[in-house]
Length: 369
Image (cartoon, rainbow, N blue to C red; front, side, top):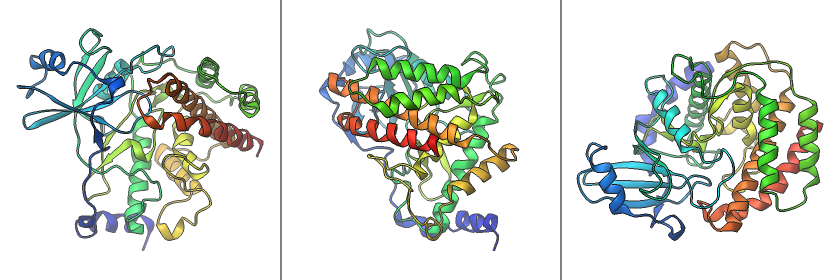
């Protein structure tokens, strides 16, 4: 049986095998953390004339995960939504851009890239303390472990294939037709990104990491000459997707905070980091025999993406992978820094400090071959 036929069988068989997997919330909710508490009555008053179905007092719970923008489950009667806001406190320049998140989610409606339905954006910080937006709450499954424990091999294969397909589809969106021509700059993506994340890292630096300094220097010297511009997600991974209760079908891609116009291979390399790194929070595929699990190898996953986007091959792959690791280290350094300040959106933020050193060292090793 061909691989394509195998995936068709997996999709067709989900009604029988999927019933053993219970539907869960995208993330478990908890009472709102004191650092992120806000006036629910003020929110309800603001939403009453702007959000259909919000007709009474709102109940608010906080999603336990997330390292950047605090996210909340908001319910009123039989209806429920998700509210995402900037964190309190002093923020790094250009970080936590919830306005950009809302804009791209709204622009992608009907594009073939699954997103939550966007409702309202509020830039008035006087309502709940910071700007925020509201989208539909989408129930479904969220897979935090990339090894997909508890699923069958054909299920895993179908999920990875669908994730690959959505990424390719995103990079083929006509961003001009979607009204996103000014969503970022065209060309020189890696020059700008290396500069940006180097500044972000230095602004939140807490320890001396020689490997990070060497990695930044190497990346600046080895930027590929090829220029491409597409809409990119910036944090594209399995955990940032909500999946249908039974089917290997993504219902929504989440966490668009880092989306912009940029080089698509940055998204692909970031999506493939799981094949190489030990993730302190959600696991890894590194060093595992993937064939019995039904999960494609990194090589096969990249080849599938190339086939879907009309590429023959990818040159300079170590650069793209090294950049993705560097950027992740810079992001986690910011998370750790906010954790030390006490205003990060997750208690796991303080654990991020250990991951920064690990990522810096692995990033340097990756570009060295």
